Amino acid sequence: MTEFRYRARDTGGKTRRGRISAGSERQAGQCLREQGLLPVDLQAVRPRALFPAATISGSSLALLMRQLATLTGAGLPLDESLHAVAQQSEEKRVKQLLQGVRARVVEGFPLADALRAHPQVFGSLYCALVEAGELSGQLDGVLLRLADYAEQRQRMKHKLMQALIYPLLLTLVAIGVIVTLLSVVVPRVTEQFMYMKQALPWTTRLLIALSDGVRHCGPWLAVTTLGLMLLARRLLRQPNGRLAWHRLLLRLPLCGRIIRELNGARYARALSILYNSGVPLLQAMHISAQVLNNLHLASLLREACEHVREGVSLQQALEQTALFPPMMRHMIASGERSGELGDMLLRAADNQEGVFGARVTLFFSLFEPLLVVSMAAVVLFIVLAILQPILQLNTMMTL
Image (tube, rainbow, N blue to C red):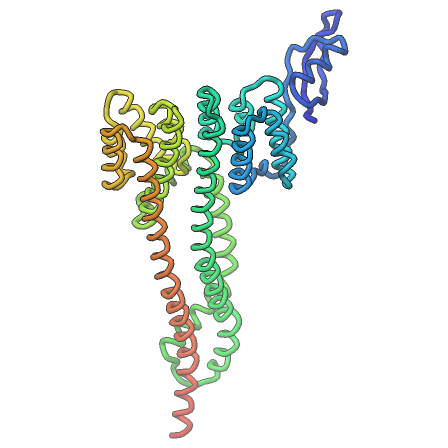
């Protein structure tokens, strides 16, 4: 049930305001009419929450789309298909989502409009494709393409997470070990050196200075870092701040290249799905630009869309963005000349994702041993800095 805030007029012409609970906006209006009230304004009340509304996972979304495509392809009515998929799901959030979509479909809304009521789950790409499928009568095929798209994104996400988890854990452990050594172990050992009436080696003096810095400045550094992170998070919520940050990321040597490759593959795949589903090229380019995570690249691709509108070829318009590598641009140009643009875009996306995956794997395969060697070098420095004064003292006592 949803709570609605209403403004209505009674039989005497007086304005009444209040709230009413109903399953949909249409049912709320019917309930008011049964009470002798004529609805003037009716708005759903969205409860305030401490945390943003949770969305469903990519794997759940892909399964939802594939099940819905199977049922609609078998000739089952859309509302019954949504009801069956909702009953099949074991996740409460998916059930509630599908029940809300089904309620709007039963009211007479197209499926695309019903999906647009849940933008946190169904983006512009999903809504545009579903609308194209409804208009062309190929909704089941479009839903299958969307399921493949969601599964592909989920596979890429899992690949990145698997590549990042071990190096991240290893980095955190290395930092934790070094901080513990400098703040707890080293001070207790170096206390004994204060009674030595001889100059300490430079390595030991450096180690003592680092240990004092960690103990005295460490808490302030942690608080300052946390404050900067909160400030950065607040700035990134602003469109201008987020755009400047995304533009800066693209200028970084390694990070910028990775972002370009990942977003280029995502754009090509989304554009191929839209184009193969019958969406006009200009509209498909505009929607595909919204799929990107980087706002600066999205703005460049919107400019490319305007260039295509003016009569420039797709390959030339994309070349001006500096987003796609030469091989990808040649594949797109070949697709334009042969009339197989959609298939060539899909091949280009597969090729780009393969290159991206190989580069990420190579990077982290080199990063892990370098991190282990660096940590070993730091621990070796700490051990030598502690042992050198002890060895000097033993040498003086033997003399």
